[in-house]
Length: 586
Image: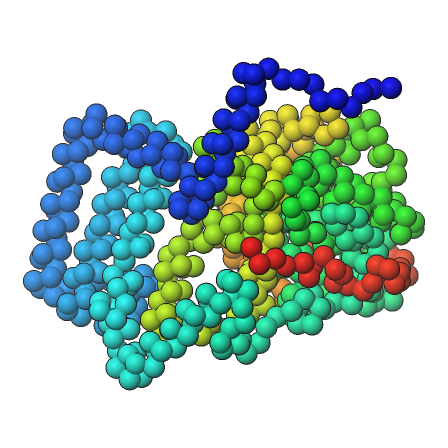
């Protein structure tokens, strides 16, 4: 029998571990002062920019001349009182068009243009160049004339005069309510309408039909007499609560699918706590995808295959699972799982060489700092995760919102999507670290090095048809990055580019005004098309991509069967289940 005795370590190893633990705790404490951003990454980017600027005297002279020309243009426009043709939403109020505010706005835009030019220096590391431009934009957004409040913002001055200062009183109450909510206290002025899962959103009838430590599997009740033989299995991102796809009845993705005659299953991820710190990507793959696929096979024995669909990180995870299941002998328990009839990826990246705005904040130093932060409690909190997205879009999510709430005294009127966005979740420490390192830093999935059960998987092994959706204004998963699946998988791929962003482009119900999309199918033996060639050949259409996907699923299905009622187990309970209600005041 093996003795459970901890092997002795050398004094040098003990000293190394002690030093690492001390430094990790120090970094976690300092991270609170830097809002979770690595000061080392920023310093390296700044040094890269400064050294290249110092080594390029001709560029320095050119930038100096450009600054002088901008100053002369500004002076001439000011003397002649020329209004600026400006569509910047921060300066749409008529007061910004007149003296003395118009020259200030003009000077500010000249500074924005100059810094955008000044941070594009030849020879800089691409990541450092992106960071230099990003941080310059952050400082300029903070210094915007629109943020000067009562003293320098004509819109605030006019509102204060019209309301006799009541806007400032309302702003003070809004600030107090924000502080109280951050500390788990009831607001002074409660919201007129609060969206709650199971009451206002996530109300599509259904049952929890399977539960494990990490997920609940929800099956929704049929609304048609017959349904498609192959059920739809949806894997949402674990960064989000599943009801992004089951909001209000009029824009619920799962309700619409159910009404079209599909049996719909969806995962509801558990919001992890301190005990889940050691959960890793393998746990999310097995308990999230494989275990629930096995449950679907047991629950729906008349279906030999399923249409699998993954959204955002859920799509990345699903692509890993599909690659593993496509190689015989890769998964030991594969015989317990149904076959995948098709694979659909919604705003999901599989190649992370161009990851969008999130890539600006991800490098070795930043990931190490995040690991030190997560080591304290075993997870990255929802507000910490949400803070990163706020930082990326500080102009809209921080400064403009502060102007409306604190200076103009406007009350926030959240809709169902905004309410979902504030319902944040945590990231287990080991899983989040592994995801960032394997996908963002090392790009292992695209390069065929991501391990599943000890063997690397390749997306080239996927042979079932794929339906891939990118969105035009996606800053989280840029559509040109999502499009790279064409280089990685050799199967038939139908690619759709739809209007909207990462969330609104996916939650794009039929009947929503001003929606459009373009679609083109590349056969399994088809040639590579660049993004530009694809756009030139894809057929643009008005309306929602949902209807196109529904027709695609029917075209890849095998007929209909009588409607399937979900299993009623009182121990599991009705939809939306228990996990969706897990919320922490981090």
